[in-house]
Image (cartoon, rainbow, N blue to C red):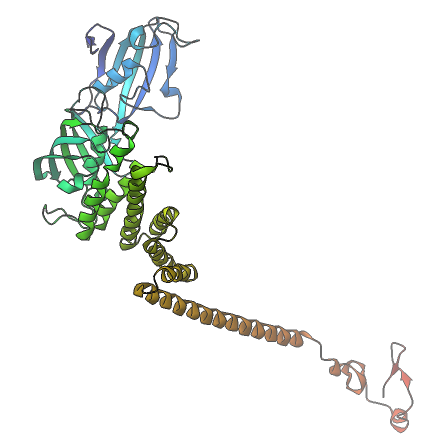
Length: 455
């Protein structure tokens, strides 16, 4: 087959000649991990590298600059099973420096490449999360949305070929749930370029979970597919670009969190509360005046609310940690002490929990819930002492039985000395006593071994 120019500039810098056609029509999307076999040669035929001499194919992330430019361009045009020769000028290979000692400066290179396979790009830190299966329309530029960016998208969701939603949506990154956007899309959009359209495969954890969706007739633990187009976006200010008064405006996050808390949606409420420390923790702790007081009050409220949300979600280690942070800001905070006590009680640390409830009562003797929980702690501690006594009693009884059994076994192993001494010694009764011995019983005679024997 003839060579054809695949260089974006159409300057002949990357030429491709197909040796064997591939299968189907799918091409590897940018960001996916491709596996290829290759042999690289100079124009004079000198081989400088090959994957075929190694244990397996060569793998790399396409479009991430991990290989020479010619590869990022050329491999993206290959179907599965395709074999082709890619010829690249120095500009798209190793340039003026070459790659000593095998590749000289300004070398034009040829690669005989076979496309083995590719894996979809994983857009989450989870192994099974959100995969970008295919980039349908490449985006523009290099900028992507950040946390809090305002995005305008179109999405089409399908399950086993059935479309279950098809709509436009506008929301802030990280807050998509307010517009019923599944978390997988919210996460994936941070790696989209403007006007990009991509096909995503989203696992249950980042879609409709183990409950599924009655509204969309999605069964439990289902993987769904979405085609998402990022129509436009406006980046939010980065934290380093904001001054303290601007950060204090994150009080709106507290209000949003409280809205979900009142609806008993503690997961969503906690998402908003958690954002507040990310804005304010980096500020100087000695911020003075009204701004400093507002910062401290907002942080304290965030930690207290995070603690109660985590208690509701049975995330007791996190609830304890949040209460600790609140107490660092206000060591006599009644709510923080009480919530840490609840977390400690759930973590089976009643002694420490009891101390927190006692401290609550020192601050407010009329705290009825603290009295109830302290009573619970005392009851649990008494039961623990009782259980420990029973355990030790059973342990000692077991040891005593074991000692008695060992003594009994030792006695059974001891020889019966009465069976082998004096007149009862059967081994020395070789014959009946003679008439003389019968007539003179007090006379000691020698036995066969030369010892006196007892008559």
